Image 1 (cartoon, helix red, strand yellow):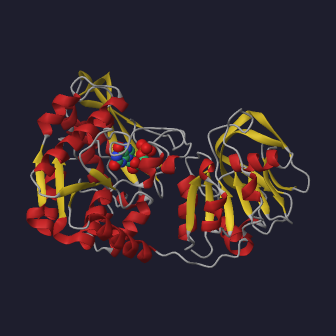
Image 2: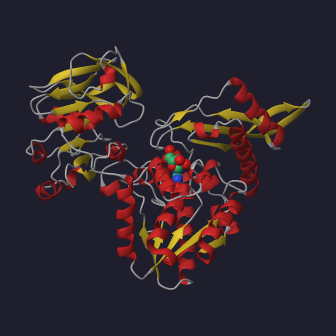
Image 3: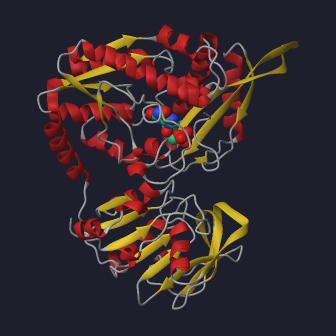
Length: 516
Ligand code: XMP
């Protein structure tokens, strides 16, 4: 593709975010791990510019991911982010040190010199909010580089070599919390790399449909359909590609939100008719999860048993060879490393890290490079029901990962009641669409309360509401005092067994959105 941006992955949680920011700018990009870069690949991709991602390692450590000289020999513009900046500094003879003050989350930087990639909006500002996530920092910049900005902790935050068009940032412009970060990337791509727009979502649909048709041929596909946006869009896309060769299996694991099983069954039965299969497996999952309190174990048990059910169903469908899943990029990046790169594992998303090693079906994941908001857009283009498109994300392992500790039927029922009240409240107050995801967590703690002059000793629940674009980073949502009061009262007055409501004021990072 003409004018491709090559993103080299050094293991950052944000690598694919860089790719999608570039896609938002309608430019094609490809991501490769640092250790897969070779001359043959570079001559195939012919990048117009290169972005070096961040990463969890330290450039000061032995055997840490390295920067290959062949990248610099291309003489193309380079933008190094965080670890990428440190690699560039080390490579060109600067010094990198471990920081006493680690910077995670928001930081402020001050611009002291001009750069062609500075967003116009920054020019008149004294200090700019950026998103940092680093332990090391550049202490001395290499020869022929200049400092463009320092952070309020006096950390070198932005350097460049004007002649060579090499730029390094200690912060993450790809993260939505960096003010005008996308504008900075835009300047790098269009003004420095001189790339023209060459990527649109419609291209994704038509390319995927062609790919799926070719891959599947005369075989049949089973699609794990939960009714969430990801699996629904996967099913719609597959349906467009292969029509009646698609069989959607909806597994009721008993861990869905209140009323969801009926909603999903009614909607999809009318779309897929006899190719929609409803499997009732509530007791089966309850039994498998009995006494299990470790979050990773729960996730793996659910993942493994989902597959067992799909395999069993596949036996009833002739020529069923593939299992389609609505896996998205954030599911992958937090479970394993995309393209086999070096990123750290955060949790096993049920449909990725939870899969058994040996499986009778071949996995198909047409959305695995996309983010949630891109999938929503895709859903609109594929004409999915808007209510379904706008529903808050819901994890595959369902309420099991919102009940810390071992689960049981009573706890599930309690949580379903709380969740319903919470979500209805948000819809009624027109807050639902302002919030990216909201849900309740049933805590394994009982506390003393007083209701109607009587002592109570009941469970606590926590409420979570976050704003986000893609689930990779998130901010907690701030309700007003009267909203907090009303939600809390409604829950305590209507759910027998709950006498205390807590609120989760944690962003991601350092928290994750779900609790387990
Ligand atoms: P975390 O908790 O990793 O969640 O910050 C990011 C987004 O992913 C959803 N999530 C999952 N979705 N299977 C899924 O389909 C999973 O195992 C899973 N775990 C988390 C989560 O609800 C949030 O939207």
